[in-house]
Length: 227
Image (cartoon, one colour):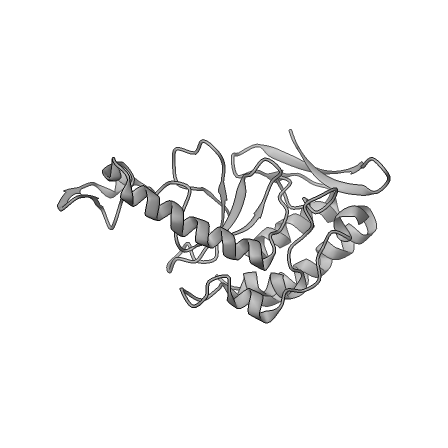
């Protein structure tokens, strides 16, 4: 799914809300990314999702100091360079998993596991959404993280998952779940919650409420409180 107009419109509202209510997050937004920096993220491996490019043309991510962690779940936005490095990290993670022992427990390709030259068929219901490995795919582009290291990734695989926003958390034992169907959906859900000061449902099922907090030395940031 792609909705560049929806991304731009929702982003305008997010910026407006931050400027009035969480100025420390607003000033943490970086200037736009350069075209070359955006191209380097996937570097002709596959086409970068237009919604991600739209985000970066507005701001090259957000600062990761006092402010900038304003997305639900207290995620910041990565810069183009961080997205590029994150995608290369995905490639390395997949390559390492394939080189190690116990490949069959990870590798699922169209209903079969691969172990050496053997193929063992599995029912689709048995393997579910298993990937190689659970927390990485060469067509996942990380777009943000929390202070503790959890990441948001945009799925670039063809099909129904294209453009969806997934969450990678430490200790996962299953495929990274989809939180939003698109970047536009992520921003629209976020700004609606902010404008109405109403809760969002987290990817894990709990509710999180937007709150603002004063920071040492002055300034105000947005924080999402789990209920």
